[in-house]
Length: 216
Image (cartoon, rainbow, N blue to C red; front, side, top):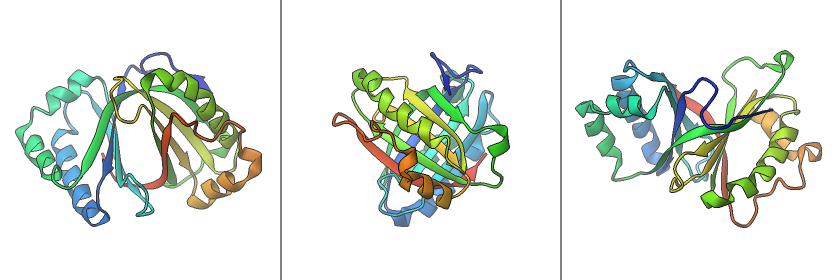
């Protein structure tokens, strides 16, 4: 496990946008995302971006965009493209987007001998809680994440902490697994459960499985 104080190790920063939207608008939204990111992915400071689509329609968040930039200033400069602004406005009528800048607070990685191949699956847990309670919540996440990191099929897990105290989701955990089956087996195995793994009353967790729908 690694802890990070402040920015990520290479001094970049992460943008996470979590979308609440109807299932029948997801395909359209993915197409719009490709259009928008296609306009800015060559901009100075852009590193990469992945759009994740929920596996199950009942999950609260339909899409989660995770993008890495050199800095917030680099992204702000890229958004000066008027075509990007026009495309982004089309989603305003049917989607609620909760966005924010994040820094990596902690991470777990599987050993080299356990690195899976193929696209795998992504487990995202977006947590709403007061910014002043984050330190109280961390033992709950860390205890569970450490145990899950020992399970077959685990690849890595990063906990992202919001930069601004008014960001809707103050913490976002993003974990990668070899398959849905590997994640489900670990989630159902009592050996990988921690006594503090359940979310405390002051936190509202939104866990769900996702697949990468588009990437730059």
